[in-house]
Image 1 (cartoon, rainbow, N blue to C red):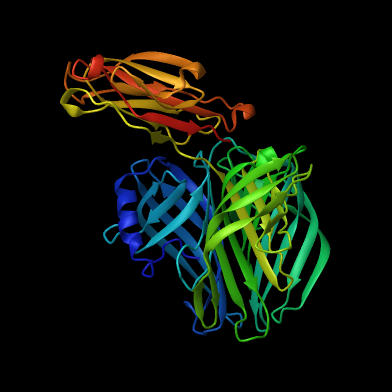
Image 2: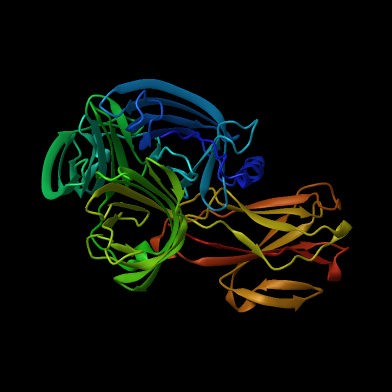
Length: 519
């Protein structure tokens, strides 16, 4: 895996990334993230041209001003078992888009030529990566923000766990995919059991139950150590952990999510960012082959235990002859049971085994093909606020603007706010919040974009700026979102009204603004 990758096969990406980075994004990130990644390639940095595997373990550091730097320990296992190790450093800029995708640009002087994209959790604490361009090297990565106040007791109880381990020796490339439950004792020990799917280089496969036990330690910043070296992290809310396995001729990634005690389809509802890495084995001319997904998925409940899957994926398949774009739409069904098992049936009759976290924000799973090994990871995505309708301008033809600040509208976001700008300087302003929109109700020469019968509240503000100066007035209304699970999915609709003598009937109006609270 390389988080920095050229996108020469996608010319449109240059303009897209330039615009995104220049816009500075909607969710500033800050601090250090621990990253674990595994990937595959043919040839690559190796002296041999056969299949190779790579494991990266390191740190990403972000500043709120938009800078990013990385330091990775990179370990390649070439065809035949030769091991190569280097330390990689790089720096660049980043931005989080309104679609919840984090873009890293490691060559900002040539925008779009050295980028990586990751789905990012609404609070910015976890990100997932898979390739999004026709690169011959595959990768699947997870990044977890380091925090504070953590200890061994931060992992306690049952977690769903998924794992992919790749081995590259003289016999060829093989894989092991695990899906099970790990139980932590909160004091440095764990036990694990589940189903193991092992595939040999020639495609021969075995499914068997497995049991294991081990030791772990957690640093105050959430760094997780399983084995001899710091190789993973625990999320600040203890809902997710990962560790990287890079020993001998193997490269493996383990990801766990907290296991709940009660589930319905409502907990899976909403938008998801899903990444997937599959390795198909066999003796034919197209084997081994590598498949990756970077998918936007929507889960729509139909009843308490089932629902629909829709979406689209950026997908590529690589074999010894090259890389093929197999991107396209997704459609299928899902089911869920009381212990969080979440089989996903998409594109075929067989369900992909997946698991849902206790809080409904993460998914782990593995491949469903007998001759393949794979790992699926997903995180719940939060939609950004959207403007709708049209504004009513005032002085100098300038209309007030209403948008949000403080990132995505997720439950527990204490820094969320509504921002009014471009109003008349020092003018009185009223912000209205409602439960429902309107199709547009004419009022005083302007338009109401909320339903007056669904009014939640209204708040009076005085804008900043020089008195009477067109477009110079602004104000922010803090709107801390409580961490109440029942609010998940609630939609709110807002509009700003500014006293403006140059506006029709003396009142300029913003467009409508809507957002959906998310977990």
